[in-house]
Image 1 (cartoon, rainbow, N blue to C red):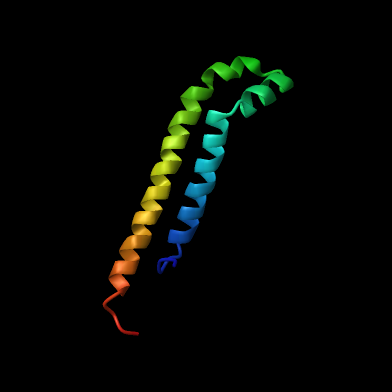
Image 2: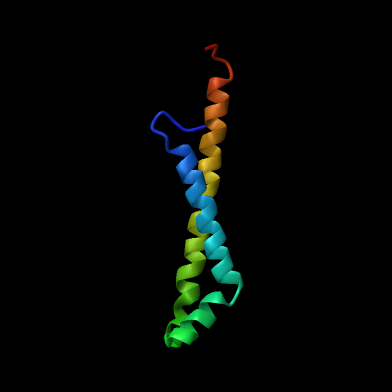
Length: 81
């Protein structure tokens, strides 16, 4: 159920996809193996500095999109079309 400007569903989709990718990279050694194979193993020490804030941002974005979606449902509940 998008807003008048159509931003609720894209925000929710972006939040869920971003959360899934950031969680996958945080909790599994996918990036460590890939960066080691490419020769960028020196970057592995900085992954936590980038990935944990990214995970927090995408989780917050998902909750914000869900909150906006709940607000829209409550706003349209009393109106007759």
